[in-house]
Image 1: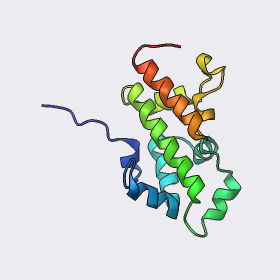
Image 2: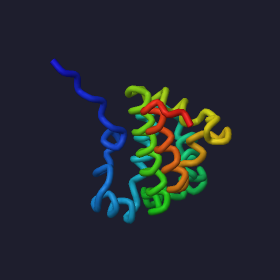
Image 3: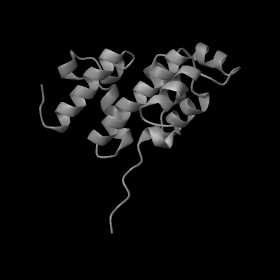
Length: 141
């Protein structure tokens, strides 16, 4: 009897897809604040930490409660974060707590910066995903 694989974070927080035109449309429209709340809940981290990791000031988030939507830029940052976290969870054998610890800890091969500190830009997120892939394959450079 085979075990069910751990559902990816994007599925658990009810994103419509991990990529593609449907997700692009949702990002452009602005994701619901519920995705932020669900992401924090699924990762068992305070909402304030999640907002910091995705580069949204708490005061800006509070203002979004009127429309119940993130801006497209904030939505993009959240989706980028979820993609990176999904990769880190895979690296950690399905353990989301270990993945978060790894993401927020300073990394020697990133000049002492934490991987999470680089996720707010596409280039930084790409570097982190490449680091995850190298680590998964035993290449520690």
